[in-house]
Length: 259
Length: 261
Image (cartoon, rainbow over all chains, first blue to last red; front, side, top):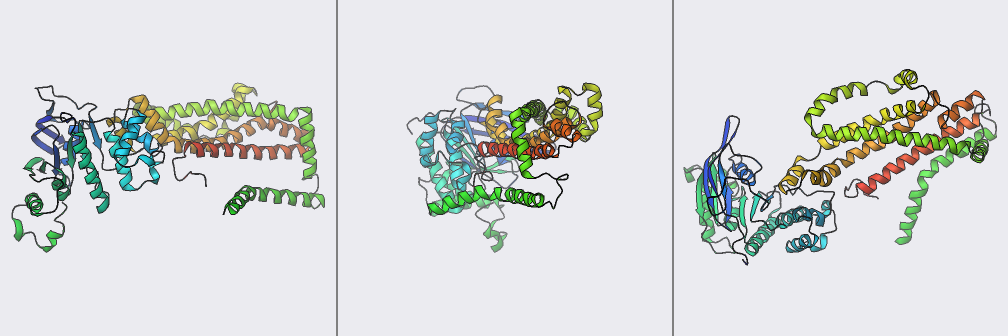
């Protein structure tokens, strides 16, 4: 972490989001520290993606707001220092890999080539995205997101569509880049073990509220040891409802790794 | 390996020519042995002679030039308007609501039903031809531009916004290229309509142009000139189609569906 102060710090204060009748997020209060890696888990439709979109400024809150920076700054929108990685790669098919990355790099060719190298695709710059594999496309999207040296990286289940092995590779890549660059990360995922692998803090959102906020006190690179399983179970059991083991029958256990 | 590749290439070039050559031979045989009367169909060689004659006298090139000029200017006017209105309506809902249903109404009027009106308005001057060609070309380009913009993946546009692209940059990098496949379909279709409309217009109301040349030849029963004109129509049609294909190959290089095989 050469530039320890690069990550964004911000606070969510009383953040509420309502779509017509339905209240998606209720009074969310959260402080995100500089360079922190936070994972948000929860069932489909719990409001975790909406929370991410609010932080990105893609939606505006019904009430409450976000305070950026250390001091009592103004309630405002995130600036250029925020980058968003979508569930789909969203590369422009009519631009070469390098030109896609340049979109994030303010057209700076050298910077684009540099990040492309960081994600291990330096030699693919001249190709069209359509010839790349799913994992490679998502790596290009990651390079595009990192090209402007963001202070905050928002990840909306970007690994959900990848196969298991590619996913592990991507997780390691993200972790490495995060340690290297020192930005703040918020990762939305439905995969509890992914959250425990990567995050400093795991937040569970239930019915629009933060139901759980655990700090993962495990050394990196994390392995699936006892400590890992402890945290994984902690989150999962909360997700699946406290009535715990009696209700979680054999059938329930099958789905225990993803929500 | 490379020799078979070269062989493939030759075959690919030659194969499309096969059918026209067969037709030409058949034509020569049928007319040469007078199975078809020369009053019905002149021999290919006669048509060829007329071709040389009209080129020498300058008649052919003059008429061809005039027709081409009319076609291109009509295409630019009608296509340009269609493109701009397609862009406008693709983005701005108010504009769409105001204009679209009127456009759909006008679109369904058979273009050639307007010929009497056009003659009354413009006589047989250049305006008449320009009007008809522009009107014919307008609709395919408008519809396909509009549709192209509406069918852009909204996720890409959202990505552009999140990554801080300005309005102009958004158009240049995302919206136009995204709508391009559809726009080019419109261009290709309207190039066909362009010739069709022009030739009808020149046949009905003109004092020059290829259509006029054919119509004039009918007065004097110059069958060979008529056939020559028809062959020229076919070649012009092929020419604009190839042009459209080249455009597609160049502008849609990124799209695996259009990659040159």
